[in-house]
Image (tube, one colour):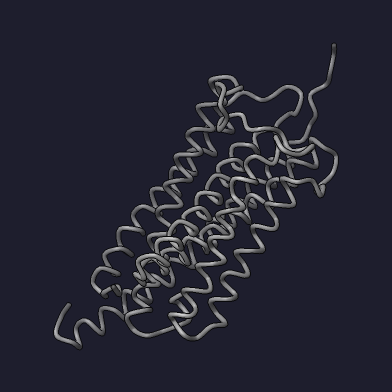
Length: 51
Length: 233
């Protein structure tokens, strides 16, 4: 049976962009919080005479 | 036992390395899916959403299963680290669920002709997502550490109970959602090129899950040591 392949590349692009944005935004918030935790941990560590 | 600060910092650093590797691997999966994997003739390019959607679903279900298992162990051993790990995994699971619940409808619109349908698989998955949003809300609302850990462990175990039902829902109910092509008793039902890309996606997003959860757990441990509640999940 003959069928025509649908032209739906825009849906693929939308899904890939949405997924990438979610992962990158979440990774960004984790990096920000991680850097803050490392900085504060470092200050407390040096203030207490090391870890 | 409670976490210590130097271990938390080591966990954060290790997690950041894993997370970077996971993001690079995920980018590799995008390239594999777009340039290496053949297009499915009946569904067109939209079928390639599968290589992002299925690994995200895998990541979410692994994350929520880990929450349940860590919660059971917490109720048994009363080790605070297990509670923090469960909560970290829940937050990561929500991120993966968001990818699953957004890419799924985009794919569904092209294949089913509708963004959403209230069938068993989709409804249970949405319910699981809301259950873990409630899990984090509960943790934010209970100030006492012991109570927070006990209450949220019960919710986490309820989520774990839901996971096998979600996997089996396509067999138990009439649903639009296709049956598994990989996690099933018989051999995988897809061409080798597609299977390789899918397995690469599973590997990449498992790595990303491990990176995310390690960083989040390290942050939670560090906040816990300092007595903060905002980052201690």
